[in-house]
Image (tube, rainbow, N blue to C red; front, side, top):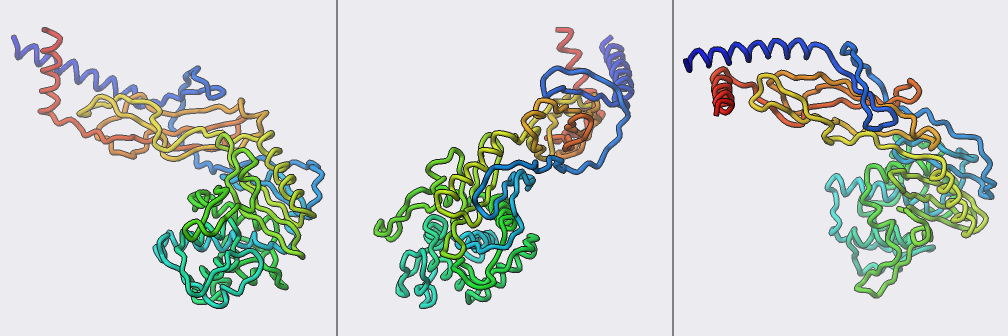
Length: 418
């Protein structure tokens, strides 16, 4: 009796497997309108589209009434230009130059060439720098951590020259690296002559190029904001007081940096960054007539961006989307989720009109490897694909062997009869 019952269970299970295979052969698309939880189902064949995540938001033609000679506002994640005014005019950057110097220092940290604890000596050349400085002495050394504080907070010319000499042997060799990096980033309006930004003939850049290097620094070295958001600090056991030259750090909600600069010829420059509700913006002001104007106009640009745009984070890598039934697996279900982040810059008037389209099978067959593509998700606005992400298995599921399958069936049936 027990043998015939076991045979019946095996036959029934094999029949269910055939039915499951038939169901698996067709895909189901789940559509969330306006990214809500209301779901409607439609059938489609399993076609995959290779869609690039490209923003179509164009910089509007608006007049913000700026007094500065040049300005630009970009969204940090995408690099999309939201506003520009004479953005390619070549002007003197003053200490905003140090953004590129800081970028190279951060790259040296990443590569292991230096650490935050590496002691940096001061040469006669570094100690002789004018302008903003902390009056380095040739008899003292500061760590890279202390140097970064002095450069980012107090815009110390002596410290940035000391770092340049340590990293490349001379300021001239370091400046060559700066120009190489500028070329690699597509900064076509830029020619660096020094690493600090003091006025020098031919030392020029544009607000567009400043936005490019600011974005590079913030995206690839986000820990720099641990320095650029400091309002006040000290060095030399509290003997040297540092106060951030960027007043927005204290006064503007969400400010994350980045760098000020001013000389008699350059006038007043600023690269200002801020983040609110996942929207990160970079505003660059060049040749403002006064320090008050550079800060007020940077605020005006940032306010414009935050008031008119939103960055919608649709999916995050590794987030669990759903669980799928697994056929012939040692476990019956597997969690699936997104393989990459998916987000898009939108005008606020369009942010509620995005449709999420998910293509997933009803059942997957074991074995399933971790990271195996199971389906895909697309995010659309008025029929246009904004971005997409593959949906992958977040765990491994091994295939059930015949002996394990019979054992599992037996115990399942035994539990039913109890």
